Length: 457
Ligand SMILES: Cc1cc2nc3c(=O)[nH]c(=O)nc-3n(C[C@H](O)[C@H](O)[C@H](O)COP(=O)(O)OP(=O)(O)OC[C@H]3O[C@@H](n4cnc5c(N)ncnc54)[C@H](O)[C@@H]3O)c2cc1C
Image 1 (cartoon, rainbow, N blue to C red):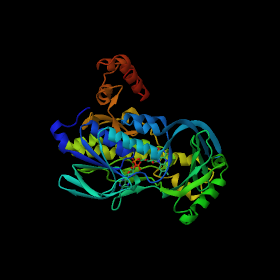
Image 2: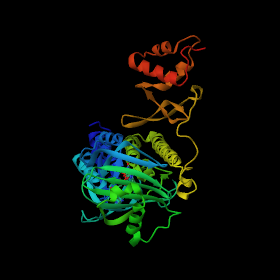
Image 3: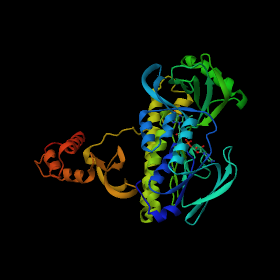
Image 4: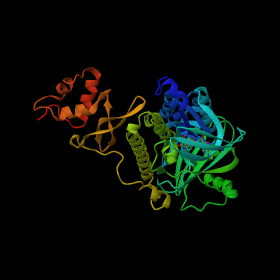
């Protein structure tokens, strides 16, 4: 275990984590590895849901230290996309039963020595250097209570309280999810666009089907709750691609309405608290990247928390690090979603497509820029379990800066290459900095790709 704390401090520093989805779970495991005492307070997910993830998310969950959670993830199955009138079945995704994933996360936390309390958080109070959380019983626990700690991690996903918070929001979006049961079948999923939204359809090997409609809240006349099942059935029946998913199957239970509006909290970290995962920023489910982004903000959080608690002189730097990364991640996924909406051109005048194809802005996903525009700036980076300041190379495409490339600090090399004398080759210039072998080749290629000439003028 790499320790961020001394043995004596370990006993007195308890970090409270609210929520035990992928984000809360990853932060709790990361803090345990640093030697912190961690208490997680979470209530079980109340409804069944299946989600699709890519191999890199599975790798991310593994890197975060999850093990039992991974057993909830199915093998890759076909993912069909029916978008802009064309069909594509080149991709695969891995289907995850979210209740099973969350139960696995819980077991992983217990296994790692995290104190796990099954309860519904009802209140939070901050006082000098301490935070207290009040909670009420759930079906798995019996008594209400209150706990105090030195730091609070808000990881209650989209349910995290947001009253009074300043937030950037995309068009208001709702996803209606219905669980159907039918005979066992080959697992598969499909994303299907239609005039006023899109559907995601999934079928597991056990014959469970998860049929999900995503619609615009402002322009859709949604029926009363009691009529939602009939409404969804009629909408799915109108989609030819949904036919195999509905064959010999019937809906089970009620339709779940999940808000799926893209949301970014404008403040995601304070002196004694941090927001991670969907509690910090939640992306449009179209991107299929929700769990990935939740992990991305959570994996960096233990180093931020450790710096805030152990190195208060660098508190502003640590906060800048988390805030800037969450914002950059959000904008990246928001623009990725926008570009995907733009690919669908059959109904440009429909409100669903019209609003989403121009949000959050018109800035391209990637911006071409010349080597002359590269800047060296001193910005926060993670080193081990701490946030420190280092010179990094900032470009319009990499506003957070690149610290290392091929294991070598990039900023000093950019300065040296810029300042090389006339007639000095790029290769010699890099070799003079002590580079050889694979790092020399990779860095040479990188500089050449940025348009740097082999021979300086
Ligand atoms: C309709 C829809 C479809 C999606 N599809 C996909 C997909 O296909 N692929 C994908 O990668 N992502 C998808 N996502 C996104 C994904 O669900 C989230 O991004 C991800 O789960 C966020 O993880 P998290 O840990 O931040 O929050 P969550 O996973 O939401 O975890 C929050 C935790 O907090 C607990 N909690 C909440 N309130 C309280 C309380 N008061 N007290 C105690 N505990 C509480 C919850 O029970 C849970 O344990 C989808 C989202 C939506 C809305």
